Image 1 (cartoon, helix red, strand yellow):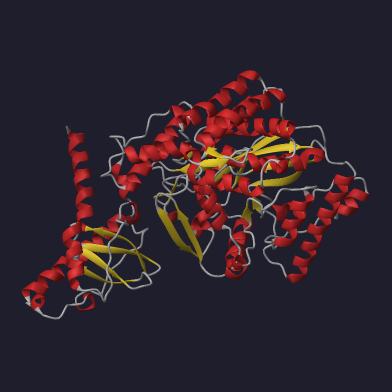
Image 2 (image 1 turned 180 degrees about the vertical axis):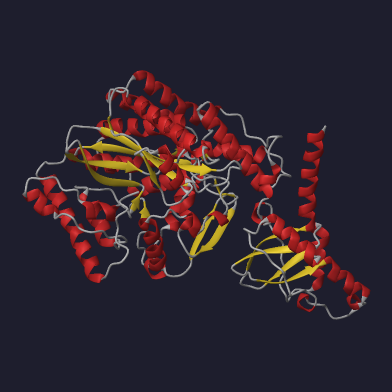
Length: 639
């Protein structure tokens, strides 16, 4: 993710100089475009594979630096989180057996990482969002020690101003208030690169935008975030909101976020996009300027455009135009950044083949997409795909809304096959990969749908963290053992040999989060009815801001009855009964510590609080359930 050698201590003069360098780079690029110096008539593909590192209990493992040092493979590099890793694959000309070679290299690098991770008790999982991530994983302790990541977090947080609110609504609804960008640790992707010539770049870039919706719908693999079932590709919503630098004023002016799909077709030149980004988005990072791009051109050289590339790397378009030099020749490429990691390498390569086949065929068959589809339809298709996956509807080239699967099977997949043939891709590879798309879409069984169906089919009595851990373990096993596409998998289940101790290491793993609460001004009869109807013994009391201010227990009600106060003619309010001298813990509190607190203080309920707000509750009954399970396992092992 870019150059590590960035400036973290700079003044306004240095910022102005760097801004000038960015503009200078864009001027140099314009000259290169006008003079025909950008490579033409060569198609190349490449990819960046991001992945999660996990421990034996399927939770995030901050092993990135250790693995990079141990593996000593130049293709491996860091990502923002210490439990993320990235592999940069070799660029290849888009023909023949290039897809098979890319797949082989991808498997090779993953096996290198797996072997190294095993040395530290870890493993690798391919997923858009790791289902087992908890909020306690999103801390400064897990940010990669690279100045770039710390500086982005500092500046993005500073520019945003107020606390960042993450709000995503799907099957469940998640709302978080954050003071940093660490939730970005949750995302990994497979980024597919396609180099095209400048004479066709505008046409191809617009088509990349147009097909992103249906390609994404078939590839979704991120339905869970922090124990919530949200979008089928929740990663898109997380990335957009976690890196948003807009203040409330900027949002009211409809200023675009740094993560965006765009708002119009490109008309004449890719410079329209690059200039828009240069003037709309503030520079986040700077570095020492080592060359004058215009002077390099004047001297007959090829500029690196380092200043603009650094700035471009902090603007996260879902289809991002990029510049690079391969074999001494400058070229432009489209980075498709919307595809999630996983669920297997076979699935990822099928997604890439589908995208690349469409990118080869549709511009040749239909020409200018702007004459066939409005940009609003393309953008709506994209976000509908992220929300609903293969369950949604999108608009086709005829402007009619239909099930996305029907459009893929009837209109797009045959053209993707023709596109790969047009590119000269080996027929065996083309058929194998696109057959995966056909079978997946026909069965409506994306990676996201497999996760949701597996979760729903598991024992409802099991805690969510147990189900998600079992889900992740099944994904990891499939990825390591067979690499068969996910639509062929049986639904995951909770294994009988699951190590239950790992499900209860910290309070947040098993605390109750679907809580019934009351206010201090409510009458005690409401709390009593709540306890009776829901079979609970403790009811938290919150103020209107969601801050925990007290607890009402069944003992309090018994005392009221014993003292005859319940016979009073005037209703009793909760504030006159509730306990306010509360003992609380945080989500990351070790379970044994919480148990000791409850035992020492002889209490049956322990509220879990973060930033003074109630986030969960554990009770003596929870520990009884855990003890019973562990006792059962112990006795079974002795038989």
